[in-house]
Length: 336
Image (cartoon, rainbow, N blue to C red; front, side):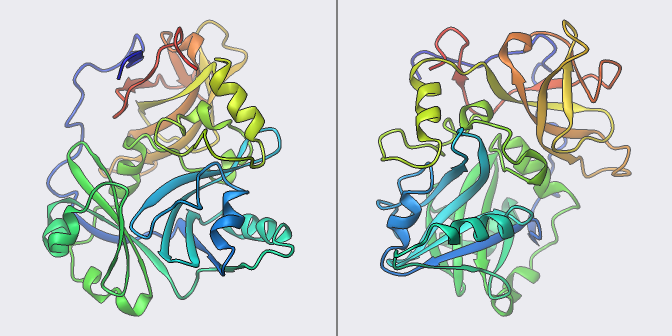
């Protein structure tokens, strides 16, 4: 796209892929770290439209979209994947740790809106599918466009972006309807989490609650913010960051030797006493001991230090080796 470049940190790995992805990264697994909020009723879409960074009123029955729920200061308190299984129904797939508090807070603002909000469990379970084995099992449904949603096997199937040519899907449905998924190969331990990190799409967890304006984690670059829609909590701050060019931090991908976790601070060589950013998501590579295996990291970082040596946890921590993102982002000069 015009005006877009890939910011390439000084210590980025050149041509690091196919990294550690191999043919064994295929199959399915239940995702216990995701949970569902159901919004049902004539005002379901309109109510959520006024709460989220996404245009929900125009969300079609065959679409899926990302959205953020922000504080009045524009900080993300939740992120979600939205889909609309029926005209008067919207599902929000979100982090399981965030879901209970977010559901409680959303209910506080229903007032006279004709919408019922409920926990999707235990009626619904979320599964991740990836790779050739999943594609074969899905048949024609597996070739649906990215960010599409469709009924499948008594549930809803969402097509996610590929990660290093590995196709991915989410299936949300009743546990008793998931027998066909159990017949697929089991994804290697941590493989799905690695694919999620490598997608460059942030997910807000308890460790990063209220830490980031959407642009700080590239959320608008992956379609999570609609700048043409009406007001929502934090909208003025998010819009100001976009149109006044005040984004000074962005999300980057990296690999680090040893453990990493969401919420950990990272430090730059030029100012080792002050944190320069924070880990958004992390996952151990599916090889060896989880406690000692290299971890893939999606981190938020000051643009001003992106070309420096960056370490995890402190100035004497392990060095982060940067990896290319799967999408371009604005350069510091054109960031808007």
